[in-house]
Length: 441
Ligand code: NAD
Picture 1: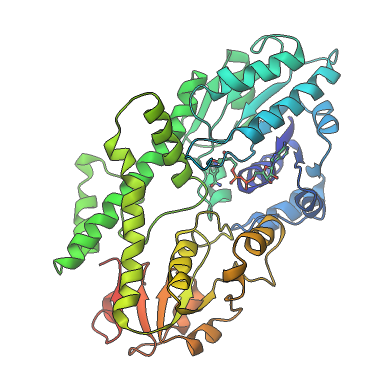
Picture 2: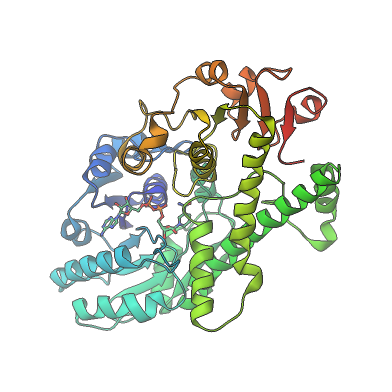
């Protein structure tokens, strides 16, 4: 199929490259010229496992190209995938500005395309609250197209379940495919797009598809909060929480997936926090009491504070931090709990150095370079290119990554002290050593 993908961020870039790899003819569209140029150069605008090679390959074969011109992209395609961002507003509600704008642009381009054979289908992949598609976006589309959605233009919602860091793998082996269809023909288009991928396909009404994504992300946050709170209690009581969880999770009769249930560091990223915030905000507006969901983010913040307190308890001032992106394998800094940790320590006047192989100023490109330069200039100056630079500086090191280069360089014996945020692979042995503290015990 001929596909246009709107938004070349984490979701759009991975979707575009993987769809091109599956044999579709894909054009990526972004308002950010840097991302368009990078893709056309055969380079990925995001850091992700395998994405660099994949973009180079599919751009090389001509299966993927990028443009800033919406009309040109739409004129040539049967289906549009909308992957623009839906961040939080300051009050926690969902920001739909980018969705509205891109829908206007697609609608206007479709109006120009009128008369061409074949119906165009607009598929929303961005995460949005139930009702957003039918109540907000479909009217915009219908106004421009001058027709009826589900008749003159296809509309579907197809939430994305990728996890940053393993998103290419997740694309080709999805946990499920959810198709919210306005009409069966729209659903057929989405199903055809992913034909050949494993996993069950669920065809549901549009608002149900929107809600499923929130069910997923709220539950992931809840699981992490549960595991971390349990881990903190176990630690206080002198119990190895990972041993507790190993046995707890072995109980398959209760059918618990172990994902997100290993005590570790706080969660973050561009999805879980903002999706929990907008869900809780929407519940409040609807006068629905959701005390469990409302406390997942405060619980997460308390967990982060535990790491700060561990540093304070050492009495040392020169601190090293390994890891800064919100999880390993990505350069994504948005709402990273390690950024928050660094900022709390920075605010308390600790002498900090940070190393993350994916967040080095000499390697960062595009949006993330801009992000760090504009939003985190105070941390940018603390970034070290090498692991050794941090080790030489630090009296105490916080380890928030399992990067093999960091693991192999970490000393034993307490100089510097190690505060383990991720349960290092050799945590068991280190536990008996002086100067080692595990947050996740
Ligand atoms: P992102 O911020 O990395 O990328 C969004 C891109 O859209 C940016 O490159 C931006 O320039 C572009 N854009 C904005 N307006 C545009 C327009 N009018 N035309 C073309 N491009 C435009 O966002 P992301 O992390 O890829 O997330 C996208 C959506 O997918 C969000 O709703 C998010 O909640 C959801 N989601 C994200 C993940 C994830 O792991 N990042 C996973 C599942 C779902």
